[in-house]
Length: 93
Image (tube, helix red, strand yellow):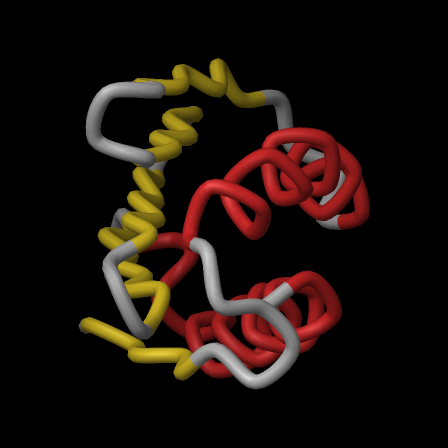
């Protein structure tokens, strides 16, 4: 599933990306899972990969795009996970 979050507080994607780099590990820890978070400064992309999930957040010119792939065991929590990610990203964009 893909979620698009338009920018309302920033005009430069790099500001949102830099703030999200600090924020995403805290968001992941709220769910009590361990994840490897990789950043790609050239494309303003964050990738968090853990057991049974992978989340990709790309900061484009006017919006952040979140892609979430969940394993079978986590699918029932998809709505709550996306809601939490959206709330946190909206704080910085």
